[in-house]
Amino acid sequence: MVCLGNICRSPIADGLLRKKVKEKNVTFIIDSAGTSGFHQGDPPDERMIATATKNGTCIKDLRSRRFLKCDFESFDFIIAMDESNLEDLLEIAEKKEHKAKIHLLLGPITNQANGNVPDPYYGTMSDFQDVYEIVDKATDTLLEKLIFIQKNEPNQPI
Ligand code: 4NP
Image 1 (tube, helix red, strand yellow):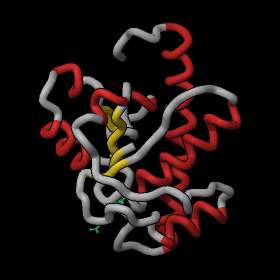
Image 2 (image 1 turned 180 degrees about the horizontal axis):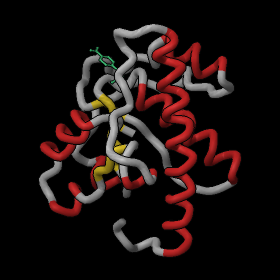
Image 3 (image 1 turned 180 degrees about the vertical axis):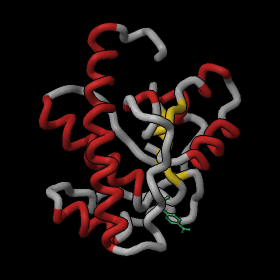
Image 4 (image 1 turned 45 degrees about the vertical axis):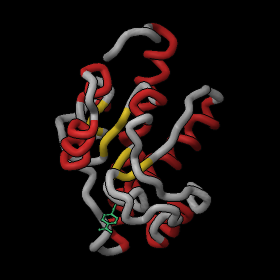
């Protein structure tokens, strides 16, 4: 799960997926990172932690880190929160098979038209709640799709 700072959008996507994976008793390795190193080592934004907590998801133990080239080898799916993150990732990726791992969260992988998870950093608490709801819905569909792929076509790129 990748955004710019790895303190607002990708941590909530990361935390929601970790929670859902546990609830469904399935096995996936979930992580998140930022395309910038602006907040390296920081916990998620306190407004995102508060919104997550209010909605029953714990993200306070996550820490921001910069996306690394080796993440393209470590992970099968690299999910960008918005089109700017997607473009940055496509630029970092050197191999065709790495570029093929990059998807927009709001896009075909979640059966949606391409769209951006809005950046709430300069917004209000209501913007953080909107992000929570958008990402909650999208990660439901994403996890369903990942479970299907793991079960039926584990070696197929989508
Ligand atoms: P995120 O939000 O990419 O969802 O973590 C942001 C966090 C920090 C900044 C921008 C966006 N920043 O400019 O520091």
